Image (cartoon, rainbow, N blue to C red):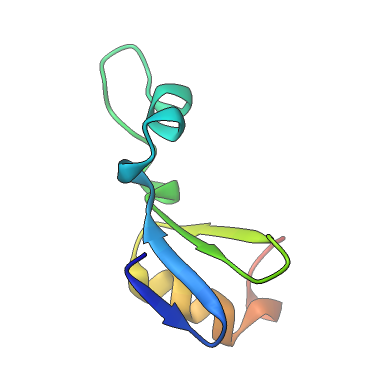
Length: 66
């Protein structure tokens, strides 16, 4: 876990080998849009390309597609 922000645990997905195997393509690159993940107490997940984006999604959920 990188940080806890307003009840969400925020972490980098690269530490999860399963995630990389699923998200990587044939040339070995990874989906940068899902580099960071936030998980709340209910297990709901949100993904983003940066820590700043994850915080923004948490602060303004109505501005982002679900």
